[in-house]
Image (tube, rainbow, N blue to C red; front, top):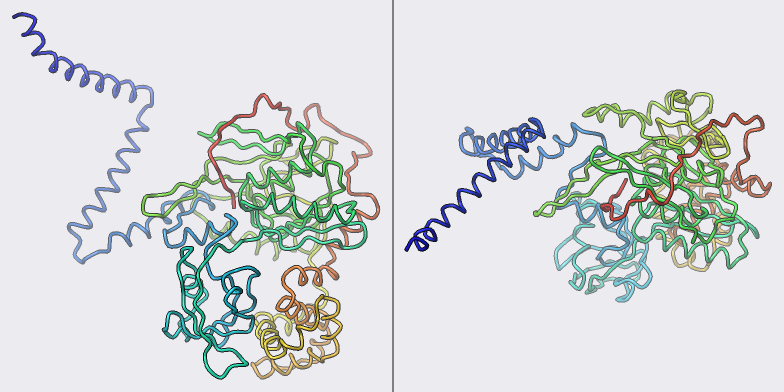
Length: 569
């Protein structure tokens, strides 16, 4: 009987034990964590309470979802300049550029005179398969008019993109047809290439331009290098100008192709983010290939990881202008409604130990965003002497060459921005986008003839006989930009580059356009000069002042596994 009585009280005893355990655990958690947990709980409760009070008691009806959506970026805006909130409607567009593909119909277009004009049709894509052609104008979508003043690039992209396997009906005006031509297109995966050009500049040296660091960029680089190697490439220029970054993993894998085993590529560290070292594993395919890397004020984040690793390991020469200066690592965190934040969780450091993040104040994005403008006003784009180096953040490469932290990668060889031929006339026509509209219309009217030219050189030779600059000047005058003969003469070469280049792009694509522009690019010319003179490998200073500790001394034993996926933009 006694045993049964004890058994009856067992659940009560267990419940009391659980409650006591919770109370004791809470006491010790608060004791050892101080009041921080309480502060966080109180703050979050305060926000939740505020929203509930507004919803219940505010004088007017409030769209609470909209209020929260507007509050999220404001809260993150009080942190660093790169912690951001991405609404659900924008997340796919933001990530698709880096993920290697998106689902759509496979065209490149511009909006001219309130109508979608097809610039080009992606080879092998859904639109090409049904017969859509460059020069077509999309007038209806799913039997409804799709033109007018309210049509924007964002609306057009959102309408033409869609889940793989879904269909969209287009009504197209074609120059050779009197009536609309109708197409039913099944959306499919459209590849997103991050390497815009890979070609041999001459018989010895190659050039690769990388626009961003995405999921497929490392594989694209391997293919580009294999292509150049097949053409007996003896050295390469990697162009990272205007490359705003992307995935850190892509950058480290790409640097690995050029470094020998055990070389430190980058390390990251944060308050709750243990130090993680990334080392070259010795499998790189181009460890001895002469290398020059191009950077400018638009090169940021993953671009700076690449350039910093090459510079600090004395693996190649960095040419151009000081890079952007973003050394913060973002962790993507998604919410159940499809939105996400990218929260800064760590800083990254180049092999010599320098952080290249430029200074910022929390919550003061306006000053941070104006930095490039201030650099321009200060003359930094035009004179190396105008660059302010932080002498308190002096570091050394493996050979003892001085490098600086605190604001971007300073190139080994500075090349100023080319301002020869600049004029107010040139600024006016470019600012109004008249070069783009003129060249698109010219291409559209002459597409049949221009198709006869299969390469950049033959097309260019033809364009030079057509008096296009005079045609453009008359076109600009009709659009409100007065003819200024002296200024036009001063900017003639720039006008030629813009007009010819855009037509080459419209007819032959991006790589042909880049080839044409590089023919007169002074930074590319400097890189090729270094390769041709066998000066692509840095040399130690003549009078070395090498300190006891140079490049950060770390071993593969310190490398941590299983780090969370991060991206940096």
